[in-house]
Image (cartoon, rainbow, N blue to C red):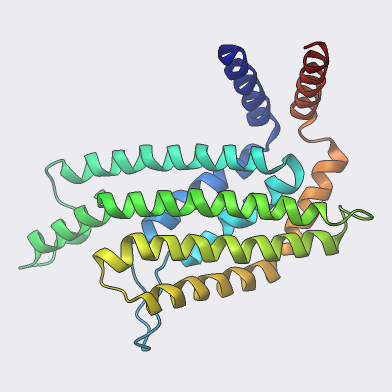
Length: 259
């Protein structure tokens, strides 16, 4: 039974991979990788209780993509792509770590008198540290699940016009706000609080700041997201995936009825 279930899930995931446009997959994975790399750099803000990192400049795109995927394919599909992006990110983090321990000099390290110091710093940045990788992975996975489920749940509240602009805006805004707050707060508590000395107030303000920036980006890019989902529906994007899921649901209902 378990083997059969795993086989079905794999077939469904393969159909999903074929259904989602490759450009969306690439941009989603790249955004996850780059935001975790940029999270190593904090932003210098002249306010003692306010803290933020550079991952904020690209993290909005990951949530933007998840909103599109959740709207068209559902929260399960969006979460599966999140796990895929996380695995790819971890793989390339491993490659960067290997590159950082290979003997040699970074081009930017050739500054007279500071070569060793700069080279070690660049190795540390690109090679990463275990707690940053762990914190970013946990934070993004938790926030993605929260974002995808809340987005889907809010969409269910719109009975008359679930595919309208108003429904898309509300589900995207609320889910992005909650998801981004959870993402930043989890990372800040796991990493910044324990390893960088941030206070709880700074962790909370970082989470709130990230949420505000996300919402500002959402205000600019929500309509392209809405247009993409409408185009996908019109063009029948994901037909193979939806047909497979429908067939599996029918088979499960039939089997349950015969038990």
